[in-house]
Amino acid sequence: MDPGTRTVYVTNFHDPGTVFVIDEATGTVTHTITAGYFPWAVAVDPAARTVYVANELGGTVSVIDGATSTVTATIPVGSYPDAVAVDPGTHTASVTNYSSNTVSVIGGCPC
Image (cartoon, rainbow, N blue to C red; front, side):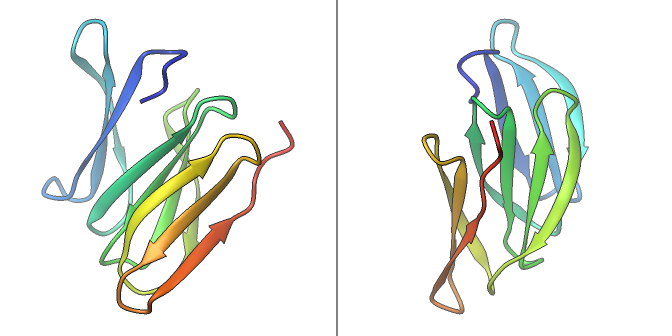
């Protein structure tokens, strides 16, 4: 969730690889974003208005611009990325890759 905009991001791997953008105040889906193959985990950097989605079967992370609800990059990471967390101080995302037993770090923004 982005607490500043009260926007919630929910992955939906059954619809084929989408992320729902939900207005927390109304509970309304405002956007449906096509992410990657089997989006599994999501983390938000509220200061940068950036959303990171780990696509478990795709071996990628989709980077979403929270202001426009568009995918701005798809970054290859390790095998079966299944969790993602954001450090709001450095604006970096850390992604755990289940099958390869690695952590991928995605660099921050010049916020």
